[in-house]
Length: 167
Image (cartoon, rainbow, N blue to C red):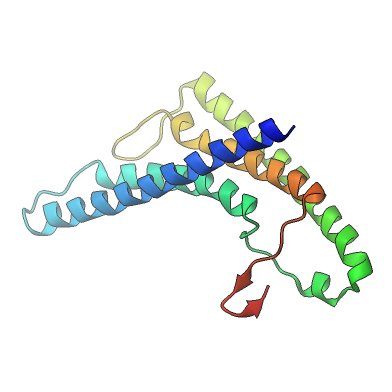
């Protein structure tokens, strides 16, 4: 089981680095677009579309790493108000519910991506591509995050400290 978790971590970290690379490409695309539009009066037809495609991929490639590190957004008011004796069980239930919701969302999004593939649906941007090329990152992000929520039930991560404030 440890080997599977290790492979999952490697894939997640690689996805996070890919997301970082996509964010760099987004910055380069926007810089090129601004320069082409305002310096050379020759706007591109592809920059805005490419940025939208890269942004979707970057988000869903990065989210599993945030979940792995337990740095996702949480609202802890109820958990923090509980006595320590109940907190562990309650957090485990919350993680199980989060995993279920991630898997449900992944199933729904994978079904939509497969429908896009089978129907040959393209994006409606100026630079169209098959829509599933963009949307296939969404179920990946949800499945991977759901797996981390499950792993965290048994291997409870510490909650991160944010700017000196207990999360």
